Image 1 (cartoon, rainbow, N blue to C red):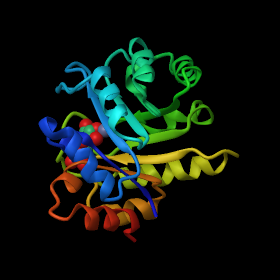
Image 2 (cartoon, rainbow, N blue to C red):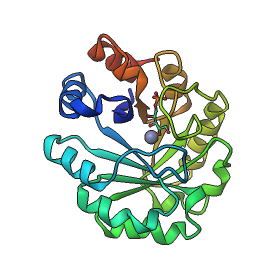
Image 3 (tube, rainbow, N blue to C red):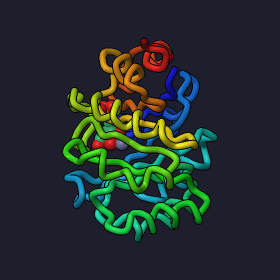
Image 4 (cartoon, rainbow, N blue to C red):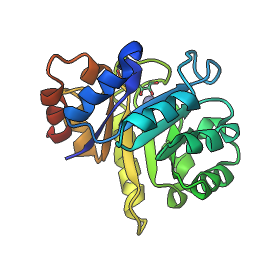
Length: 216
Ligand code: DX5
Ligand code: ZN
């Protein structure tokens, strides 16, 4: 059984509070918040004020995915806004060890993520410093894209690497997660599924979330 984090990118932004209440009632475990800067990825979303507003209306853990060119300049603001997890892309930060430890000092759980074309081997020296690794199974920037099948093997290889550690590091996956891909992802060793269009596009959110979480 995996945890399920609906991505609010697919929510109705003028009815955000209602949509958050709906996913909470339907069994969401976390809320996944996609922060895009129009530079690292070709899309723009929202920043710390919206995260702080969401923090006020939900008790669910806030899983903040930073798709920005300069994450080090922003982690403090997102920590103050109430992020529980802060995920940075390895492609954006040459001093990843410093940034991950800064996030932890700020009282937030640090996580790292990588684009589909980035090797999971790049994480070897940082795995012992993070609480979660997010494997991107689409090229980041947009909801509703098709799952990249090679992500499954990447997740399996990451699961093998994590076996060597004596502490728990969660594996999360983001992009193209639906009722067809979720069973394979759970089988490959995923702990947390992010799903945007599959959840918000569903007529029966409760059933969809239950199916995604238990799918195997
Ligand atoms: C993509 C974002 C995802 C996105 C997933 O760049 O990081 O969180 O919302 O959307 P779906 O689940 O529709 O692929
Ligand atoms: Zn995301």
